[in-house]
Image 1: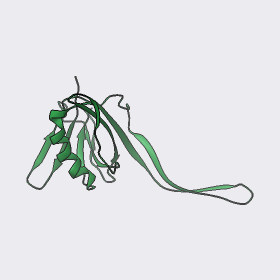
Image 2 (image 1 turned 90 degrees about the vertical axis):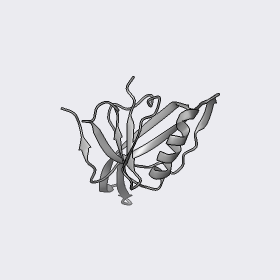
Image 3 (image 1 turned 60 degrees about the vertical axis):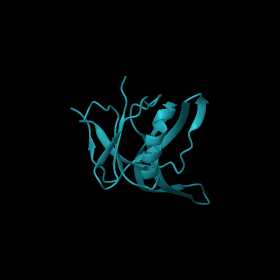
Amino acid sequence: MIVPTFIYNLGAGDIYFTPTWPPIGKQPLDGLEATRHDSFTSTGIKQSVLERVDDVMTLSFQFVPQSDLAAWKAFMTWALAGNIFAYRPNSTDHTVWGEYTLDSMAWTPKFVCVGTFSFDIQCRLWVGATVVSGS
């Protein structure tokens, strides 16, 4: 089973957090989100001004054991503050990773069954990020 790793630094060195279970239904590539301003003339002609196109990633953790929640809360406290973290899609592959910030503004794990919770998070590739992909 391939599980990811989140890496963040509270100031005393890197913290590596590897969830017990991986996200499900992961996109093969990050999605894209445009920051664009559109206007239309009275005759219907469209003008678009593009600021940028960002890479966004949605991670759906559907099976989170209660024993992981303390580590998730520590990570989410860091990420919800707008801080940068590294994401490795495969915790055993140190050659593929990217730096992200969290788009989500809340973290509320939902009850699935006894001892299991779920949640989704949306991450945005940090502008100026280091992205390393294996060869």
